[in-house]
Amino acid sequence: MKWQSVYIDGSWVRPEGAQTLTMVAPSTGAEIGEIARGGAPEIDAAVLAARNAFEGAWGQMAAVERGRLLTRLGQAILDQEDELTELEALDTGKPLALARGDIRACARYFEFYGGAADKVHGETIPFLQGYQVMIVREARGVTGHIIPWNYPAQMFGRALGAALAVGNAAVLKPAEEACLSVLRLVELAEEVGFPPGAINVVTGLGEEAGAALSNHPDIDLLSFTGSPEVGTLVQKSAAENHVPCVLELGGKSPQIVFADADRDAAIKTSVAALVQNTGQTCSAGSRVLIERSIYDEFLAALAKQFKTLCAGSHDKDLNCGPVISKVQQERVLGFLERAKSDGIEIAAQGQIMTDEATSGGYYVPPTLYRMVPRDHELACEEVFGPVLAAIPFDDEADAVRLANGTDYGLIAGIWTESGARQMRMAKAVRAGQIYINGYGAGGGIELPFGGFKKSGHGREKGLEALKEFTVSKTVVINHG
Ligand code: NAD
Image 1 (spheres, helix red, strand yellow):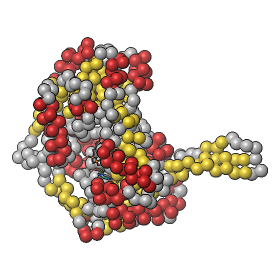
Image 2 (tube, protein in one colour):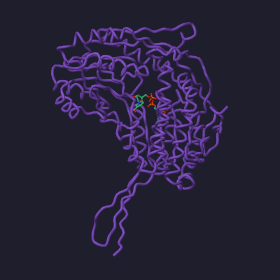
Image 3 (cartoon, protein in one colour):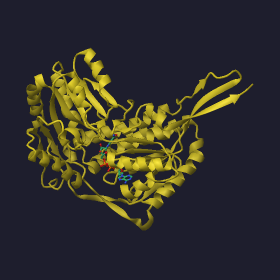
Image 4 (tube, protein in one colour):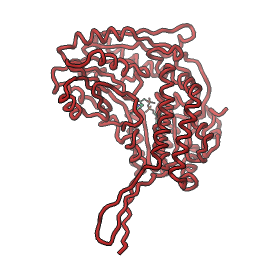
């Protein structure tokens, strides 16, 4: 079975020793299959295949042809939307409607970057008399990508869309908790005609295949999405090998609600931005900062909405699914238990709807906390579950202090009708994306995305990503 193989140089191969890892459906806790446990030998082979592809047929392909391949892959994904949606929902536990949105977003990455492939232009510089100077942008070469479990298909599109569009050859290590859609996506890439070695996928454990990839001396750029802890390890490896890295790490993103805000819109969006993917989104709006003069009233309305939330099996298509694993469930429940012993009051809690078939799934009740102290872990640390912390602020300066008062800076939502304040807040809040009267968790392939501080560095998505995945070369011609 293909799941038990890794994809290297256009072939599905069993890893040395044919070792496998068991995959579990988060909705039920039941085993659903085995994937290959690749390690250093497979990563070595994949990097070599990518190097050969970059120096061979793939590297020499015209930009327009590369673009066509990407666009064709986008269409193939849309053609298989139902199958991919079911696989993604089963594997991650996310509700079917969300999984469908993810598959469409994955297709959209390939459409967007397919169109961009032949539009990466260089520049010329006026220099001394008798000279012509050109700045050309070139692919970096072999790119290594390590992606997390929360959005396997979207991450496949985000990482590979931009990297391949500009001609890099890629080695991708998906997360061991969820990667079945990735294996199907790479099959589709093969079917639409990507040449051997352009895309290589090695499944396996982070500390084995992941570490082998980030330590590999023949990688030209590393892109990593995941936890800040592992991001630090990846960055250290990149430093050892003198390669650049793009890190997309976690967040503790705020919704900042001023007294003059459209409250209904702010409440609806605050709930959606938190519960999307059961809170397991790096850009989840996991703090709601409320101007003190409307705090009680706003929180009461938010709590009313929160009480209607339900978590259940992916195929029930409720507001939340399960979290990804037993480990993650225990981690999130740990936050709830510590909040209880610290005397933090629950403002509202949603329901868990399970039956006999799903009682073994990894569910956590969506929970809204009131008056969370500013230095409490619920106000500062990433829970990565459906847990929202409500915190009051006094005035604009206080809102900025609070918004910027964590180690993270990924995205922020600002709710106010005052145009001048919108502008001041957009400038003052340190986050990679700022939304005024809205919130775009996950959305917008076109929109550059990335962090400040512990949320990471470098930008993915949009045309900005093409800068990360290319390098400039200055050519100086003395024509006399
Ligand atoms: P993780 O860091 O444990 O794992 C991410 C990936 O790194 C996986 O593929 C894993 O196998 C691999 N990995 C683990 N140990 C490794 C090692 N020693 N060397 C190399 N690779 C290794 O993170 P996770 O638990 O899978 O994902 C949750 C975290 O990811 C959260 O903190 C979340 O905020 C973050 N995240 C960020 C973004 C973003 O775009 N900023 C998106 C999704 C998730």
